[in-house]
Image (tube, rainbow over all chains, first blue to last red; front, top):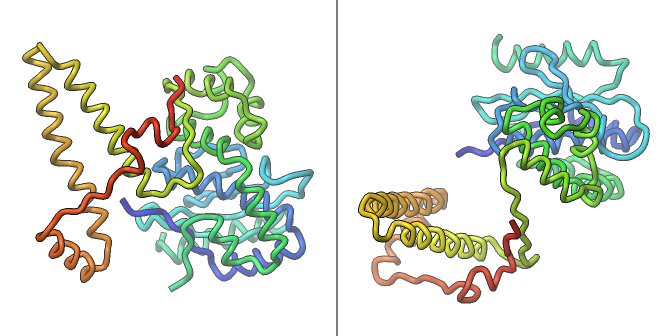
Length: 119
Length: 191
């Protein structure tokens, strides 16, 4: 059985480094929820059956993982956009954003999936 | 090829520049492994938090709270409730912190032997059951070596071939860490 792997995009890496400096608590919270999501799919649950309060469908198979329940304290809304490629067993980490960048982040994620899968 | 990561811990170690951030993130993620496991069980049964809450007889908010709780805030009752709701029996075990993967393989081999003995014991004095037990033992005999060979085949070819050649002259089986799996692993089950 092939293992699931995570692959961050360049945009994600830049967003990660920015959040590490400016919003570390929010980043830890979304990483905590990413860990939850990734462990569930790694143990064989189909990504579409992962129903968690911190996960939102954004169309085209894209899912946004927010900060709710993860980390500690009161946190600003932060979303990590991922795309689970079921055929390749790769979870693409597309970008991280907040409420203000939500529209652009969803568009960027959709464009990423189109360029990846051609759909 | 873009860099890939096997888990979130590796991702954090690979991308973080600030040592304090790295330390805090790894600590936070390690604090709720059990509640993540409960989320995994529920999702594996294709159940929403609301559906599980109905089965347990509590609010959806309570399920959400359980699944985001730190491990030291969970109670045995939470696990019993999840087990009952999902049709699972609760087993609790301990193992020594210094146990290696090879010890785990040996432990499970002895466990398997115990289960096979149980099957054979139950099948005695009943022809139909005996036949079934024998068929299952043969099935196990066929499947277990396949699992081992599958693992071995992931080794680089040269090394794998060398191992196979070497095994022609003698077969070496290392001993278990002690003679009895239950005694040595402290992985006792409490049902």
